[in-house]
Length: 153
Image (cartoon, rainbow, N blue to C red; front, side, top):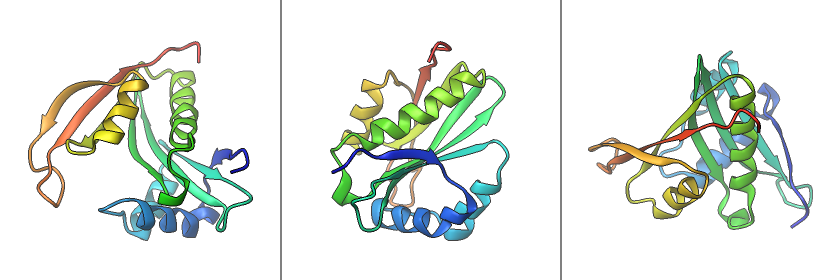
């Protein structure tokens, strides 16, 4: 795999974002939901592109920025591109921007049974802060996690 490019997603990337979402996540957002997120002034969606991949868009992260905090809403990497550091790069892009915009914390929810994702977030410094029973349509609980952001990122 060639070195990926990470850049802000735009409305022109909607089709690629929908493809990543449906290939990667068990409860994908609808195209309308992704389009609405792209229009949100407080949102920042990051797209991972690998030019030697077909299609080149292989992952994305959606962050929401609020006064003093940020929230990671989605992190998705297509199965064929996993375990290559793309999630790490997407997280770094989003967390760096959040810190530079003055966020002190970043929050997220992850499926309590999604051990791979939970471990990735722990390696990034996220710590469990709570749990929501029956949060997902499957009945799975959500683990709430928070990270204190370093403003020197």
